[in-house]
Amino acid sequence: MAVADDLDRATDSAWDWVAEQTRTYLASGGTEGHESDGVRTLILATTGHRTGDPRRTCLIYGTSGNDFVVVASKGGADADPAWFKNLEADPSVGVQAGTRRFTARARVASAVERETLWPMMAEIFPLYDEYAQKTERVIPIVLLTPQD
Image 1 (cartoon, rainbow, N blue to C red):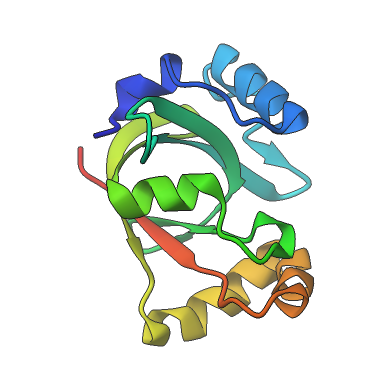
Image 2 (image 1 turned 180 degrees about the horizontal axis):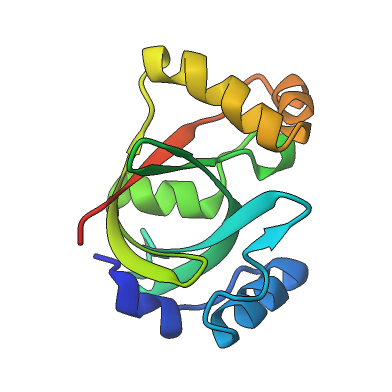
């Protein structure tokens, strides 16, 4: 079960540029790396579905009410990203969005929610539409609901 404190001890993404951005973000307390050209990112900590170890990655996000919204695109790959598989196994996650740090519960958006959330996220990051064209899978949209 990942919680906010896992952000500090989690293993970084295997993608070097994501790991570097994540470390810079956390080292600054969320003041560096949170926003670039109007695109905001958060750090997500999940529990490894095979290892049980905390893992972290940096993701673009939007908001819907009190929820934070992320897209499990993996650049349009045919497989879901590891972080998505992790939260499917255990939906308790740690999140840092800017300077705010909290534990959240993750859930996949319903088909009805997706109808409004996909266009919102594609407006924030237009490459999502291209990613969707590259794969036959329906790219999941995940809602992170703060628990504290």
